[in-house]
Image 1 (tube, rainbow, N blue to C red):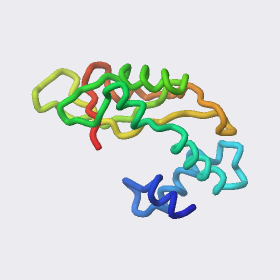
Image 2: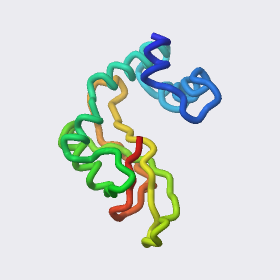
Image 3: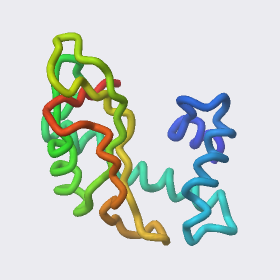
Image 4: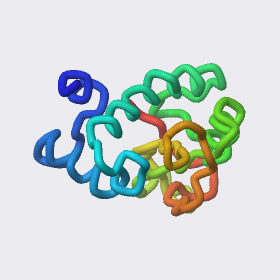
Length: 142
């Protein structure tokens, strides 16, 4: 499973994958029904990633990575809701807009989907921090 985790759930910001996974377990895994089995928690994460093909879902709605296209939170939310019957949580990084548009730009960093404690059913993410602005100013990059 470690090989699967390395390719499907890699570290992007922490020094090593292991440190990243430990952080994910502490932050998210310990409040699941898998409290006694970290590997079951990560196996579920890998299963969910295979079950949900967000790339295909977004592409079907013409939401594709492109430095010159701008999207709204509603674009992502409505597309993902139509597929999962639950709203995601978007995480973005604010940047200055080089063209001087009001509100700046937001680069999409993460799309989170929320599940019940057992990991069986999708549910609406309830603590969306509104980190992606309110206008058509989200850039989706690879």
